[in-house]
Image (cartoon, rainbow, N blue to C red):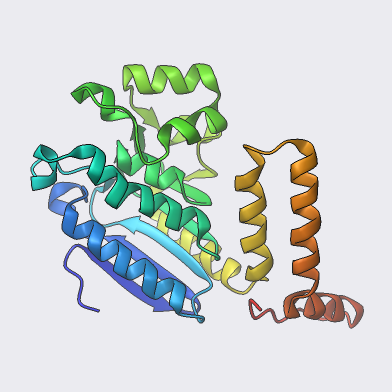
Length: 258
């Protein structure tokens, strides 16, 4: 695949997807969304890929929508429906772990796409900003759903109404992200984590993702029923059999994501 706005590399079970518009702080365009859809379809179809790592090239992770793109003067609601909503749904339902390495500013949709990933690492110099209020728009890409759940109502309201920039260190303290790391260590730590997850029982991890995402709208009884059903499915997997056998034989398991 010959991409112009993103890079995609696959090695050791890890697909590394890099936003590649560094001169525009990797801001989204219609063409970039089309390439992301193609890349994510290819990743999901490749059974050798068992973890996805997303990052950005240059000094920014993603500055949100490129306001110079033709879509900025078009029907923005239609753009959200065509481009951003499917991207968030793809990341949250992808049946493998999704890691995000935020290497710089993550603004607007760029921040919320990062927060849609399963595990988020951020460079110490990185920052997050809900920039929508600065141009009279509403947070999208799941921001109004994700933020109250990860930082609470009061902080989510202030972040979206004031548009204040939040440092990676504060994002970690507030529970927005998993970990803040030194800039020089970001990609090494993210790749180490991705390679670790790529050899884990990824079928079970996919079901864990499903359960965690469902919990926000389920009653306890509904969640208990879902856990029962997913546990039954996980127990029928080859990875479960391998995990049990490895435990009994006192050896390291060899999971295949099946």
